[in-house]
Amino acid sequence: MEQNAEGRITRVEIKKPSSSSYAHLQSHSTVLSKKPSTPKKTGDQKWVAPDEGAFMNIFASNACRLLRAFGSVMVLIVLGIIGLTYYATVALVYGPLSEEGTADEKKVAHTVLVTYHVMIFMILWSYFAIVLAEPGSVPERWEPPEEDPEIAATIPKSESKRRVCKKCIAWKPERTHHCSVCQRCVLRMDHHCVWVANCVGARNYKFFLQFLAYTFIGTTFDAICLLSDFVQFFRDVEDSERSSSNTSPQERDELRQHGGAMTVVFVAFVMNVAFAASLLGFIVMHGNLVLANMTTIEMYEKKKTLPWKYDKGRWGNFKEIFGDNPFSWLLPFHTKRANEKIDQTAGLTEGHIALKGEYCRPIVP
Image 1 (cartoon, rainbow, N blue to C red):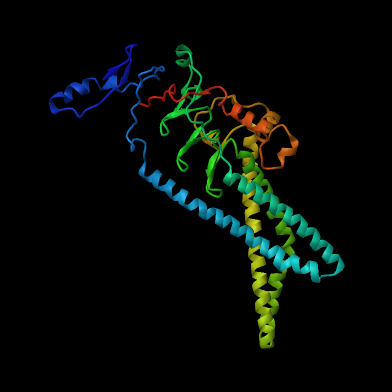
Image 2: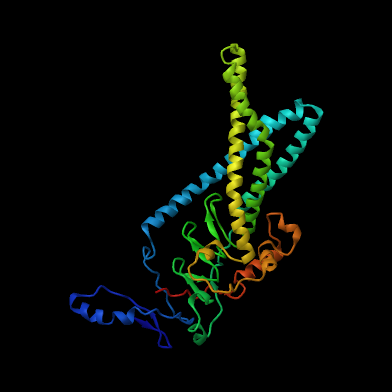
């Protein structure tokens, strides 16, 4: 055991007790099990890292490894779905119609193609903004502000500004949670999304909402555009069954080619309807969360302070996510002022980044 100049214990080495002293240690187990307070910064303080398996759950860790490995596959699946609907809409339906149709059909086809390409561009832009953007990590050597011990003893741990992550062994601001998949703390973490292989946090939550909105609008628009061809698919099936005995081999080959194209259109239509229906529920849920200034994790937490202390009114809550500039509400990027506001609302500006020689890691019991 080592002590500093103030008489505080800075390092404790626990050795395996002998059988003769085991009963003596049991008598002091109550004292040793008390949660130690965070020590003040001292020059000779030493921090002992916990055992690597102290916070590991074998079932949760295996699931997290699976999600990490599956993340890149999900990105390819998303791009494959977008590619399938693009092929059905552009290459099979409205592309040929814009060249071979009547004058009115060409106008409709050109309008559909231009609108559809704009939607696809916004979907891909917002999607890759989520995948590639930093969700919001806690800066290295970040320390929270000091608290009066008397005041800290009267408030719940969830409301304390000096919060500690037991897995990162580091300080974390308010509303920050540890992601077991990414293995790091994320500012204002909402959830880990396997579809984007990334966490959704303070810095990319806006992009996530835009992706939901643009994908819902795009899939709904595409389903409407493919509706007539979806109905035609069943008519072609009935016609082929009636005339199957009277067709020539050449006509049968043409029917097979046409039938294959219509099958792709059929699948694309069904996928558009399915994704639009499922996304509508997510949009409604996250819309309510935005207006309440609450994350998905906070929504499912058992203990919430009422009234909600982060609520700034619906308009204020909306601008906290999307910013003050209306031009940036529709585009997946953050201005410099928006990034500064994210740092402020995430609680980073209340603390400071200590120098290497002055940083004091918290002691986790």
